[in-house]
Length: 460
Image 1 (cartoon, rainbow, N blue to C red):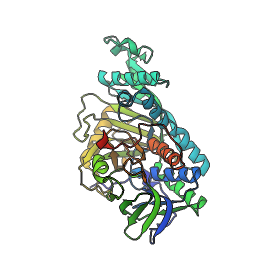
Image 2 (tube, rainbow, N blue to C red):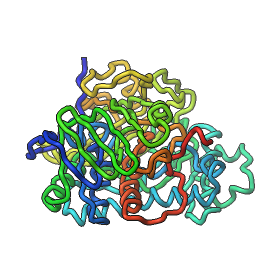
Image 3 (cartoon, helix red, strand yellow):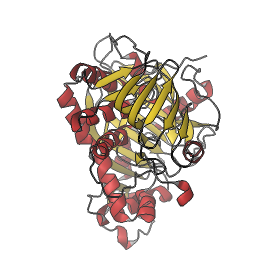
Image 4 (cartoon, rainbow, N blue to C red):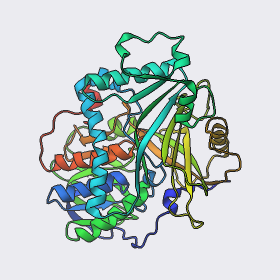
């Protein structure tokens, strides 16, 4: 049996004691969830407003999904941009894309302001495609970017493949031809099935270390306005007309507003005393998926990168989407005791968490999935050798909203409640942007309609 061991949690050097909520408290804003979304939301609220903040975390800061993710930063949605444009219009879709991309600068701003030491690596990453459906889908996304005034991403297509294909004129200028061997070089792939590669800005960061450092900064910098309580699982959130009560096992927090910064798959109840019920309309619609990852350390020094692989005809029974989509992140392993080293992490296989089921990060890692990831690496990733020793195997719970877009904003059935949640598989940058947007709302700014706005599903 393989224990759930994350490299991000392994790097934490906590010195703060766990302080649970032990007596009733009052605050302007109560934040539920101490992952990156909750901590960054607190950062912007404290800097943008004069509000006092209480943050409640069931376990320890960043020990949930934030400490059990792939460590990869990417600005795409796990849904075609063209599909989002069809639903919301090109203008709103592009505004949403710009918002997520703005989080690159927000992370740098936070690191500078809080004097954080967590390394942030940014670089040009890649996504490799093996069939025409993926190629044309991403060409169409590039077309939407161009129509909305964003620079198209760099798409390179195998010249050998193009020789036997007809590309619609609307995509002219949105791709370049390269020899097939160059496509494989960009992907560091040894499997010959890849016919195209898309390059875009990507990055990697230990979001658990980032969140832990930022929590320490907030505690030290705002002692009168920020109070952090770990080991304080919420039992229920009761919404009133103009306030809320958040109840834990030991005490309550009385607040003017509540911000849920969770994965959307919580174990507590939402009780709306001023309007229609929220539990049945919202929580039942958020699906949980368990993502599985593995990582190994070697003594070679390789440049950081992030690559997504969409292999053709590679069925994986563990992936509920059926896409068999794998991703790889490579970065320096700063905490190696043996000197300079590289940490390479791979993931992709997921399992659906059925409604009503409980997830525990203490569950053992699925050995079948470990073999699936290892087999993929052996067949597709050129630098990988079977001699590489897997050091980390871990899993984490991700919340998927029905439309695949993060929910950031006010609950339509009671504005006392706000959300910054919904990982949808790519949670770091949207979480950071969401924290700023939440602070803008709480500051009283009137923001234009957004693809991130929570919607009442009964009104659709």
